[in-house]
Image 1: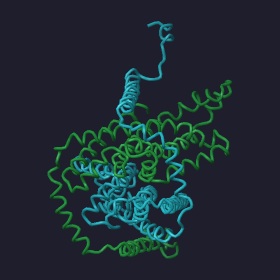
Image 2: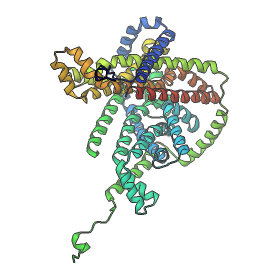
Image 3: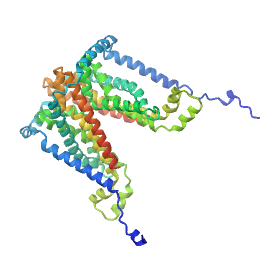
Image 4: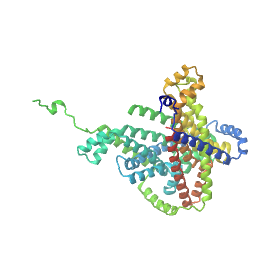
Length: 267
Length: 265
């Protein structure tokens, strides 16, 4: 090949296969959107009076019924307990399964796969559906809500925990094994110090999410401030609904501030 | 020969016990017991619950796929809700996230936008769905609107953060060549954030798919309605069938979105 022909080469950013798969992605996305838009079942008559309904809704919400603060606060405390306890139970359950999922800790493909399957199942079923199942088992109340939060969080915390374990530096673990450390000691003294920051940030992050999630569990009878919300909704007391919504908003914002400040301090 | 006296040098024990840390664990255990008693947990309740659970599981098996047409319709509607909500959520998130990025926008635009994002994020989709069911009636549209709000809250925040982390060198270079604002965005910003943006969008599609299986409980359409009806009729074998379908659908969706992320890396 002459030098001129080499210089004349056409430079391209992506390989043909990459371009083809990008094109396939766009095609797939557009196709899915068009099909969905054409086939979705929407009743246009409902849309005409949507603005009226919206203004009506806000008119009914204002002024908020301040006498409803008492049950709301009780519900909120219960919600905080559900979220915290649920997160703790989730972590207690997720750590052993996370150890099974981490390929460097458990070099057994079948066990890894099993743990991954547990995580996917836990994450795919929504917390409200988990709550429905636990209400059927334990009856209505915060016990069902706490377990729902816990089971829903196993997938999230366990997956991130396993990823943190897999990213741990093998050097110090090899050193411990070479010194004759037992399996428990390698976990506690080799892995734990390395993943501790990740562990606490996962726990805090999930706690923050769980406060949001546990606020609505009451809709299916699983305790917390959602019960107060559901009662007000069923009675169409929109001014009481407004009180609950404002309370949830305040707590969620406060939780986010707490999580951000704790995270910057401990990490 | 150098003699070191351990006491004089203040010998350090390897792996010294951390008493403050242990105290923290004890406090945690005390909290768990306190909170458990506040919520009315008791061993007796737990054991009766396990009995119920046994009966519940017996009634769940084997899963009943006889009403597969109902399940199929519901899943299809959930998919439609998820796809449409993701598309419009992403579409709206683009300008919102851009306006919330503090390195490209003046403070008087970015702060109100951050407020909007915080408002969208702080309410669970189910609460938004309830409000939309009241405003635009039962059906898939209420679910779509609720998930659009949730998508805006999530994607705009991550998108704004991704823009704030870009290298400004490229942006300056494009600007120095005399490009206008739009060209700066397309040539300087877009190439840096596109892979991450596709990642957020596919992740949000997964998340919307999961949530679209739930909005039906409050009347927002999708498989959630079928699930809730089956639950209320104590057809637990149908509930299990629906759950199996949901889990496998989401597994497939995760594989597809993982593939999409790899293509755009």
